[in-house]
Image 1 (cartoon, rainbow, N blue to C red):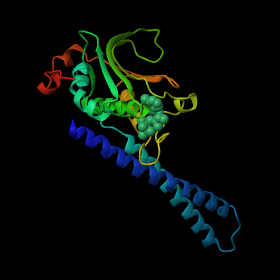
Image 2 (image 1 turned 90 degrees about the vertical axis):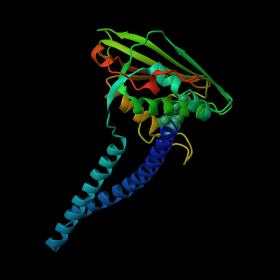
Image 3 (image 1 turned 60 degrees about the vertical axis):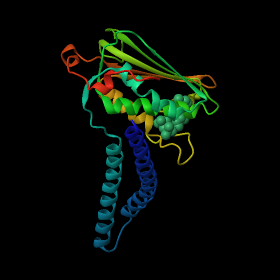
Image 4 (image 1 turned 135 degrees about the vertical axis):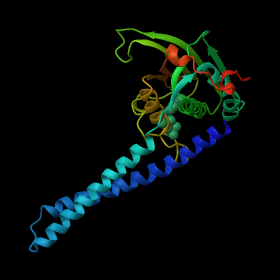
Length: 257
Ligand code: ADP
């Protein structure tokens, strides 16, 4: 878990670097591309000059494409889904969460009995939870309560956003600052952050969103300024055949919180 925290911090640093560079680079490229396009529309005495401008424009457009792909790569996740007991995963991370949160924040864990395992990438699920916990901490500088609840939900034919089937729903709620509508609307955008430079990358929620969608699930958020925020992650249940796969021991046992 210590490694997990180091991984998240490393990803944050990579995100900061990639995001910062790509952002500035793209801004400058926009100027270069715009100028070259205008130049390209001018009449040149020398046909070689026109060709050079066209070549420079094409190269700049390729750079722009490369930057986009670099950003997409930074966000892309290689998933290895397995059968994961989400309740055990939450409990196993208890100690790390408490250390991350400090003493002013109370942690409450509420899990429904006989939860079916979720079919997800374990490392990504842990990173997602840790990211949500860090966001909750940042939203409660004066302290508060963080609640993590797990439950089973059944999606029916009428559910527009989820395919019919069983899901493990993990809800992470805080009693923090909440989000005004303009922040809520952009919260999942990559590189959107309201935190000061060095504190936030704006990658956490976009990575969680990508992970949940790629896993065949859904993420919903509710937030009220001044009252708090709840993230609901719906993760598909593992089919019975996958459920029989034996889990590593350290993840089955619930750690003390
Ligand atoms: P980061 O945490 O690096 O800013 P995220 O993608 O995780 O990036 O979050 C984007 C933004 O969403 C945050 O900057 C913050 O404004 C808002 N946000 C996320 N989680 C919460 C929360 N629990 N309470 C209030 N605002 C939040």
